[in-house]
Image (cartoon, one colour):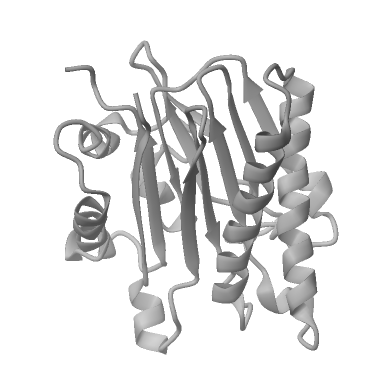
Length: 252
């Protein structure tokens, strides 16, 4: 079966009031042999070109990982898979460095989540906050990558940080997922228990269900954007919000 994906990034009410653009970005790529690559980035509000940083990081990471897997041998061990993800993060940072001049690199500060799912394995990488939740074939929901926090409240490590490479977290599982969801920190409090890291199943259920039946990614993405911009959600968070959902439809 072919993987399906949809997503939305919307501007938070705090940025609407201040006139700032949405500083989140997301994207995905289908793999020819089956599977999917997904990325979400959240530009730091303190960085004047954070929206550009998030967009460039997503595109560069997906480009690099897609190219690496296309050239990779059919059988990969966990160390090789992790190496490809680390290289994709390095490529995303390099893309920001190339476009920084004459502006400081910190002007493009952004977090980055990257996930790859194939028929044989699953891998997730993260620098900064946001999280990834996986839906395993046995029905379990599991938070695969947790938000990274700094020393102070609301502090996180961006891709542009000097110690980003050391803070990068990569995990690999020798098994495929049924579905996954990536989201920026604007949704963390709605998606997962911030104390235990456990995902809220009632939150994810309708988004996973949308992967089955008639599927129009643009139409479902538009409905998702409307939900993320709703008064009910904005009462809980005034930050930019991104949710990217991907998976296999239920068998007929």
